[in-house]
Image (cartoon, rainbow, N blue to C red; front, side, top):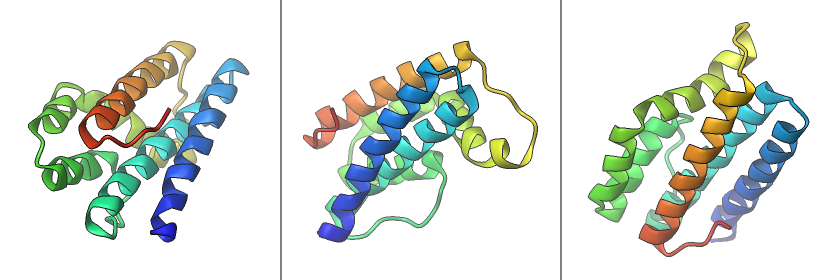
Length: 131
């Protein structure tokens, strides 16, 4: 279980760093750290349920897997209603490193708000505390 718990701790570290970077106006790095926070949180939640986690880096795949292992339609509905949010997170992970895309204060602010909603939903469904 210790090998899974590190994911939760690392996720929180990325979350805190994302908020700090956002305040400093470093929006690209803030977006990247948000993606890492969400990705690792998803892997942690799946891992504590099944003993391992998928090795993918796509939050859109991870959230579907979490909905499956939790047998929870609310998680899947959240994803379906906010698919563009998950696309933006994936852009932050993949595209920011190799292409000249720039995230703005507004776009990262929206990523933060959607991430908060996502974290709160997963806390409610899984009974695992993030905040």
